[in-house]
Image 1 (cartoon, rainbow, N blue to C red):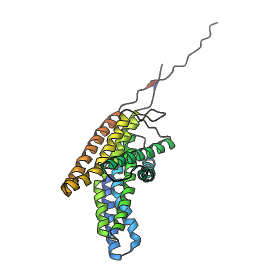
Image 2: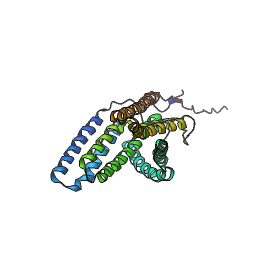
Image 3: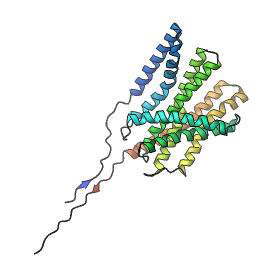
Length: 294
């Protein structure tokens, strides 16, 4: 009698989905405590710790939010952490090299060029990691989680750079540095992590088991997230020049962020449905029985 064998569907195991709240609350408490201690004691050695904690808090919380919902995939915490690290470091290095080469002056057009460069840099860093670790790259849900990690790694290091630049430019103003950190932290969930998660999700779904496919829908998605990135960077100075209104700038960025989150939410629901589809069982081959006659 034939025996059915195959890979069982993934089990939707119960998992706590509130760890991200603990990460956010505890991290925020530590940031405030560190900031108070630094101000009271005047100890400059605490400055790097406080800056790193403040700028990594929201990106790490964002990645935690997605990771604790990864029970439908085989992704491990070390793999997600590597995506965060390599997406941040390699993406930042690549962008730092390419942007001075291709961008000569700041303009609305250059904002879109920055979008193309940085979105391409984050994606390439992630794809290099996936190839190096021999990770499958055909699961849309994997693309979302790893893309969010890579994008937020980039966002965290970029925010550290902005905070340090604000500190130097203001000649050591702690209030300006903290303000820069908090503003970038509040806006982080609608930026790099969301854009890279969208792009990686589509690339993973379009790719084959042995190679990446970067054409058709994947290429159009790349242009789309680069456009959102360019509008995010380019619209504020234009609006400021035309209206000199801070609220208008914030509203424009929130609208752009809402578009990105809406697209990501749609992809996430689609990816979860695909991940819950049972794997069909493959009938096992029945061994032939040779009967000697005579």
